[in-house]
Amino acid sequence: MQLEIPVLSFDVSSLLSEIRADLFPELTGDIHWLFCEMQVLACVNVYDNGKAPLIRFHSLLNHPETPKLIMRSIFIHELLHLKVRPGEIDGKQVTYPPEFNQAQTEINRDQQRSTELNKAKSGFWPLHHLAEARTC
Image (cartoon, rainbow, N blue to C red):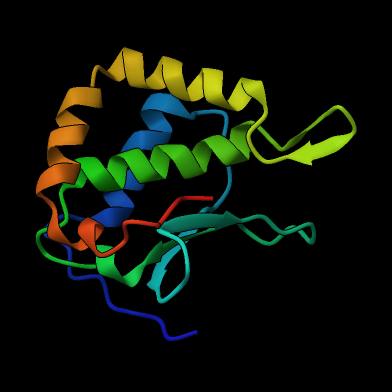
């Protein structure tokens, strides 16, 4: 995996710290992040051996024009995966149990960011290259 030096116009580590303090104070311990080439827009790796979780972002997001609001939204989504673990529905393991979707809806409503986020997404050119991209 080729690691990249962040070139965003804001401090990504500070953004993560702000989000954790505001929305996820129960998530203690280190959480690492990086930019790299991959198939999805972002994902979080959780390790059973006590190693700190790792949030990976697609290289296209590593751009000086990446809106802070987009990175904030993606961080929130990935941090929710650490708070609301995969569940089981009808005997099948699911990444997005109802509790996950409910928590994400509540955060979006509480932050009143949906309209602002959609505006940011529509004007941010790298996301157009990731039409099929998704977070995991």
